Amino acid sequence: MRRILTALLTLLTGATLTVVAVPALPAQAGIWHEYPSPANRTCSDTRVYNGTAYQVCLEFNYARTQVRSVAFISPGAYTNFQVNLRLWFGGGGADISDSCPTMTTNASRACYTAFTDLDRPYVVTQATFGIAGTWQLPVRALDMRLSAKQQERDNWCGPGAVQTTLATIGVSAPPQSELAVKLQTDETLYGVTMPGRIPGTINSYLSASDWQYKWEEIYVANGQTYEAGIDRIVTSLSRGRPVIVLVIPGKLPWWNSSTPTLRHYLTIHGYGGVVHADGSVHPSTFKVADSADGSEHSIDVDKLLLDNANLAWNGIDTVAIVRT
Image 1: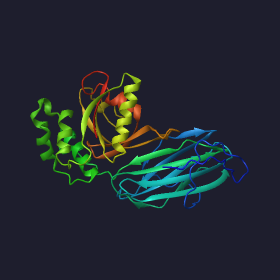
Image 2: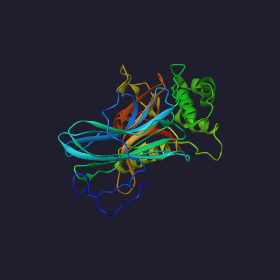
Image 3: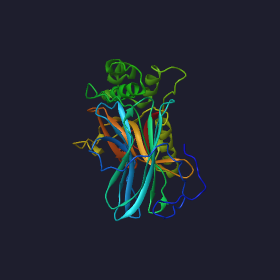
Image 4: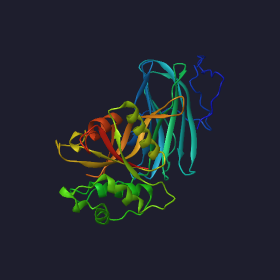
């Protein structure tokens, strides 16, 4: 996804950049702007180097039909910085490179691409910042053309999450009443949707050649199994396939009441993180759709999985997910 250059790159100010992984020169150059107005964004966490904060975001128009890449930087003092940006789509879609050249200031600045039609199955942006003479590890954000659905009954968060997943993939989403029958939601004690019934229901609307869904429990008390579970979530998202997770909703930051006995499904459809030198992606935030009201939220990975999803299924240190 990026070419590694072995030569040192010299800033226009004369400072030599220490090479972490020098990105290929972009096809075109942009200019630094003031921060754009707040919008619906899927972002990497804010990282800090030498007192300078930076991140990259996918920014969507109101209808969520178009997207652009935005790199944000906020120096703590006068310093020089530059950025190389890339925006690309899965499934052979557009691949756009851009950059903003070296600038020295203590003011916050943004570098962004033009808006582009948001195509399925997914869109990714990656930014590599050079700050005070040093290239940083790339930061990345991934998301999809989300089609969030609101559950139509109090106990239909399962059908709502499945409908959201199918619509986001691009399948003509069946009505929630049909999904509730297939999931046997109203036939189960307390009207719950069992996670083991979700994969077969989703797969019944997909072709045999498509990625097939399965469910699993991630044992989160062990660091290796926890990280492996996060990797599997990222793998599914990187195929343009959302992930459904069972949570205790009363622990969610946007939930208004404590509900210790209630269980709820969220749909994970994006992430933000850092790309390490070996090419692996370490997400720090997930973007989720909540079928309670069809809203989108950004949430810390550990907050979601360890605080909200842990213990939700069987009362032990596991997280129940449905993924490809």
